[in-house]
Image (tube, rainbow, N blue to C red; front, side, top):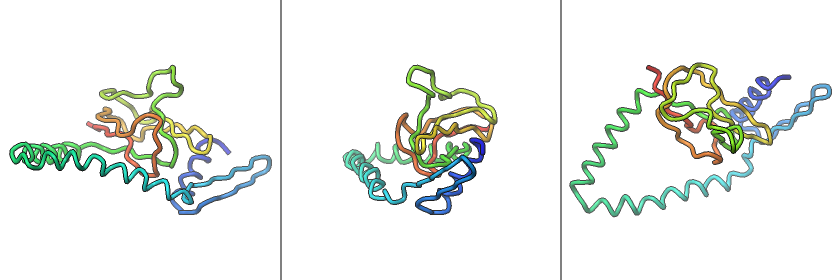
Length: 161
C-alpha cells in the first residue's frame, strides 16, 4: 500500500462520517480516526469569529464608509468568482513548509503547475503532501501556517488563466 492509497483511504473515511476505521493487510496495520468525537473543539473556532463583529459594528454609524466598504466587498466577491479554490482533502494541521528552516512550498504570485506540492497537512502523525490539480497563479493563501484545517476547507485561491 503506497502513500496515495493511504491518502485516498483517509479521504474516503473522512467523507463517510465514520469515527474510526482499522485496516490490517499482512504486516501493515492502519487505524484512521476522523476526530469526529472531538466536535466540541469546532465551536471554539466558530466562537472566535464574532470577536471581530464589534469592529464592524463600530464602522456602521459612519454611513459613507460603510457603503464604500460594502461595494468594495461586493467587488471582491465578483473578483474572487473567477478564481479556483483549492480545498483541504483531509482533516489535520496545515503547514506551508516542509520544516521550519525551509522556504514555503508556494508564495502569493507564484505560478504553479499541475502536480506541484502546495502544502503539507499532518493527520495522525502522517505528513500528506497536497498537490495542485490545476495550473495557474497563487492569488491568496487562505490559512495560517500551523493551523488546524477541516475537510473541504479552502486553502488557496488560484487564478487558472
